[in-house]
Image 1 (cartoon, helix red, strand yellow):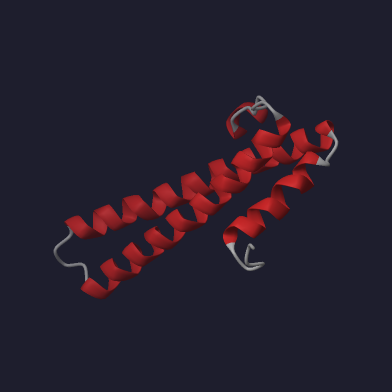
Image 2: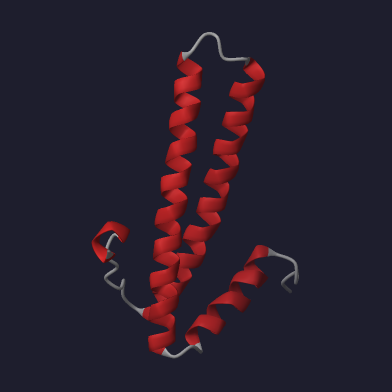
Amino acid sequence: MKDAGSSEGHEDQRKPQYDLMDKTELEALAVSAIREHRRLLAADQVVYEEWVRASDDPSTASSVLQTLQDEHVARHRRSEVQQEVLSDILDALGFVPEVPLEDDVR
């Protein structure tokens, strides 16, 4: 018997909701999730680069380095969760929709 609070139970509940969605609606959700994933990755990269820069600067306080490292790790975890959601959406959709880069849209 599965524990209702387990991640497996949550995954079983999440996938059917996507399977029940209209393909047009699901594709719009996928495009939105892909764009969000790109934004998260870009923001994560900025934090990572700042952490690397601060690590190379001997005058940076250890508390600042720890804060940047903690932020980087937290962002990485959030990105992993968002990637799982995106993967579930794409699995239900059955293909990866074409999503132009934000710069290409303007």
